[in-house]
Length: 82
Image (cartoon, rainbow, N blue to C red; front, side):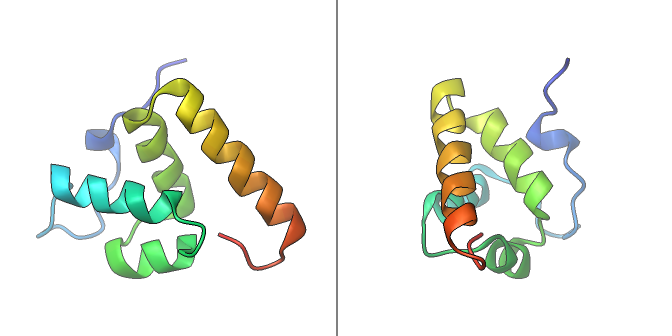
């Protein structure tokens, strides 16, 4: 299975391509326990599936798995997490 690259993500903001600073900000927001996927979508226009692809592309495999595990675990405990 081929992993999609950030360049393959649909760009919902045509005037704002995903440069390194934007990718860094999205990753920082996604890693934060205080920022939901809805907030990321409001700021950057990326759906949660697109955020997961971006995270998979830019994080080490173990870091990505740990992040997904944490998001999943908190999501089971709280109804309004990410």
